[in-house]
Length: 89
Image (tube, rainbow, N blue to C red):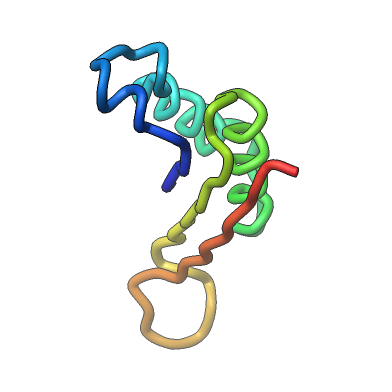
């Protein structure tokens, strides 16, 4: 996950209130990944992006990459991945 937000005040003041709590961000994303199962990686990425944009006010845009190890497709692959970017509207 890459979260895009204005970090200029946090960088100048060393004040957590001007950024996001990365431990909380991790916990939210982990809860989604370990939560309700999905068949495709796309809905998982959408859930993560939607939740991050709604729950973390300063985040204006996020890019989510989901990697699926050992995909059930013919051939020799270690993994497949998708990446999507979503913005606040």
